[in-house]
Length: 567
Ligand code: FER
Image 1 (cartoon, rainbow, N blue to C red):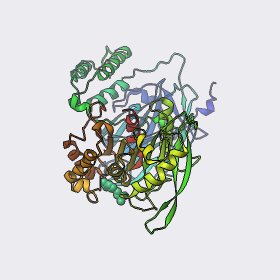
Image 2 (cartoon, rainbow, N blue to C red; image 1 turned 30 degrees about the vertical axis):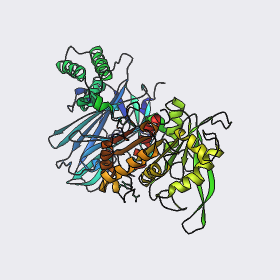
Image 3 (tube, helix red, strand yellow; image 1 turned 135 degrees about the horizontal axis):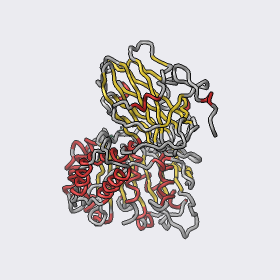
Image 4 (cartoon, rainbow, N blue to C red; image 1 turned 90 degrees about the vertical axis):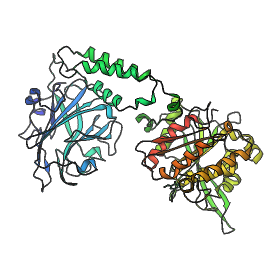
């Protein structure tokens, strides 16, 4: 449909009568230098400028078949990146609602980044490889150019939600912001406050410019890799050397085919990398794929079970737990499911992870999607609580083995013939226990007290307190010895139990857990360190940037789940 010309007419500030900005067709080079093609675009003067600012800015937008381009020209005499918080640095912030659904929460199509005047990119939403940026200080301010790779090919008349912002810093503070559309300051968590950009100006003979940016991003990611992990890293460095020879942005000889050939060569070299034996023993973090964070088409269900259990006042408490049943759960006796018991952290409760029937929280979405994709066999996941009852993580195993496991495994189709301890022991290889923080402390206690009933242990971001509180950090050797003695005296062989542990390097539990793990690594008769289950029975994934929060733990669980129940 040919847009009406009134839809393209803009006022002196660059807005159409219905309040949109216009992106014109054209492919600039993203290098921080303003190509002549930008001169064909009318600048947008932001509507909202915080009153105390001496800074001003204009924005321009271009598009082609693959990308949206944004140019910000900021006049600011006083530039600062002193703050460690990216939005409090002098920076340009970009928000895009690609399918323009104006959702009130960020979804898969909503993108959000900022670029400071030194070209440091911080990505709040969207995969980092979607963005290519350049920033340059100029007389009296700075220039930022951004390319955002689009999921769908746009055309004349395409409309996207957009907000463009400048953060004005003074020293370590943010004085205020400049905004093209939104005065609420809520764009960072609510795409419905964005304005809109209309794509226009593509003529019939128009062609998009070259795209070296995916390759440049791949090179950047490659150069950040730890080459010491591989036996054959020279494969990659050879490709990089060839690339350096080709002047990709400006070389006259370079065409898209050359660029794509280099991209494929580099990807192939990366695909051929082989880890050293030492490196292969480590478990490596993979973030949860974006699409696994969406509601699955094949949803499991959450049920709640109630029970009564002794408390520490010689009375009893009524308690409940939640049970995740996988999509297509088959209650007939012929079908059997593995069970993963997963404990919350301190100050949390049994509702935290799954909520209850009808809820579809983060972990459930991940489980649903992993099962639907065939990453793991359908399993049952149980979220109990150590609150109430004996209210003591050191004693939780009593409630676990007398109340919880028999209740769950008689109610559902599991490998336990009955709820008797003998039958629970006989089915131990189909049972795992894990938890976060105090739930991890509980997991180590479960190893100590209930090894007969569980084969897999998933302690996340918490040490063992079996010697004393925070003993994993304070008395790592004694803690490790205690755990090792449990294993030795149990009569189980190393391949009869597995410990898959994880935390982040920014996690407050890291200093408690890491020394304990190091001490355990020394006790090789019982704890054999390897992520290869044929070689060992224990690994510790340490994740760069990971903090003491569930969004990280859920990602560790995503990485660990495929290692459960298959040895
Ligand atoms: C740890 C184990 C448990 C830890 C914290 C906890 C910070 C939990 C504390 C709480 O919830 O009170 O290693 O490290």
